[in-house]
Length: 164
Image (cartoon, rainbow, N blue to C red; front, side, top):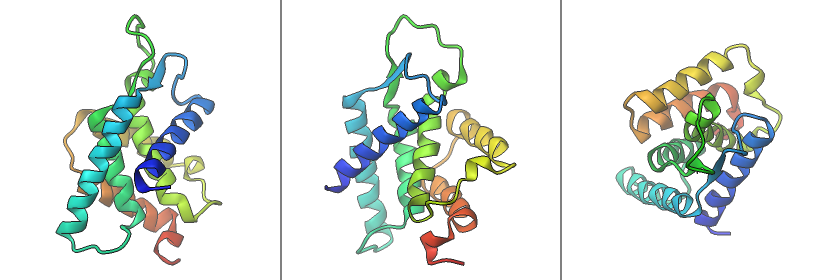
């Protein structure tokens, strides 16, 4: 499986998981295949630029993938209303792309730490709400998102960095 296929599959799986968990309303929201393709192409383009800028010859670190992909998801917005006639009032509908971006980033960062579940941490809900606000209402760069995911990874997913 190539990188593009891996990222497409990962985003689709995250969307389904968020739907199963009730965090995104799959009855009113869906993933647009053309926008998903554009999202992953945007990510791959940013990834190539990052590798060139920082002279990265091999794979890039998970938190960098998470930041670039979260940025692409929120920029392209592949989660769309299933129908244009819906009246959206729930946060899971208004902020669906932001929710997907954050959870997709966390899923990528936790790749080597299957036992860690930060969503149960006492601070997670506040952190998550603040992150959604940042992605939806404030300005940021893909590199600032990488730093957020790096910080979370160093604290919660130390195996991504070879342990503590």
